[in-house]
Image 1 (cartoon, rainbow, N blue to C red):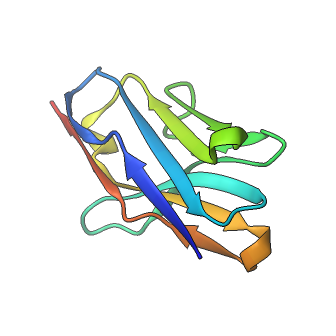
Image 2: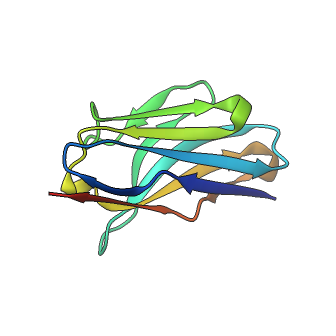
Length: 117
């Protein structure tokens, strides 16, 4: 089995920055897409950013130009650099990764990001 563990969330003022990390552990041979999702209170979980194994990326329109997703395949880790944060970015952020060997995607436990105005 595999496990995803996020870190880096916290409280920041509007305009500030945070960097989220998500490390995969377990018996891992290859990881396909990796991504970050978020869920604000009373709202559905939404895709924030995604990166393929070939490092192609896509972003939600609301974060384009402010957030950057990257990955380190040697460390089985995906990152989300968040700049120019806004109060509406407040949410629980979840890491997701698709593992070819296990035939499915897995979720991390989530990390809280709170942006104060």
